Length: 219
Image (cartoon, rainbow, N blue to C red; front, side):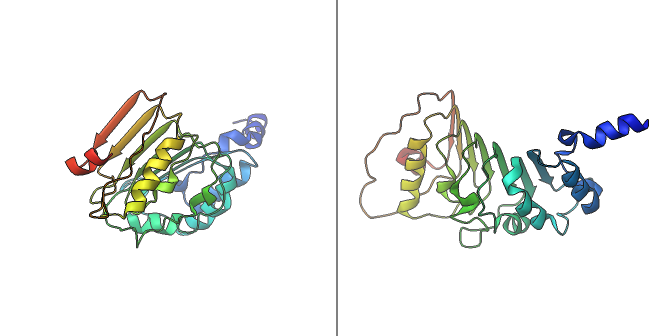
């Protein structure tokens, strides 16, 4: 590559917006440095061939990058998810797409790294949210979502207020076009009937609901 093209490539910040952790932490940091102030697309997917485990130091990089995040995808062991999201309480003003996938369903709400203050509750541009893990809170549903997918195998029995959070979240997300709820609905026993309410989703085009008959009927 000639010197001119090398200079062009190094100066083009969008070319470096996707740090490559498969190349090691040195190059991941170099990508971030060269990306300057460009919004980031961070993907951390554990794979036996390309990325056998989450590298040390990723958590600190992720925390430092939150204000610049435009897209974040995490797919790894629950233990690593806990480590990565535990302190993510800083607002993410540029985040548009968030995907979190636990490669094993082995954590509970009590053991989860998810905080009720996850991303400070401030993700004004978040449009696409996909969570396949236990231990989240229904307060992750934000009004600006257009696509929501929640899956949580072996979800523990949650309290009544979790159902209220779910309904209130859906009420606020009037722009939803795609909604998928699989094995994740909260349930409870006793305390009288569920509060009667209605949810209007005028933009909805695709709806998938999969859970126990009782939980589906409740919703």
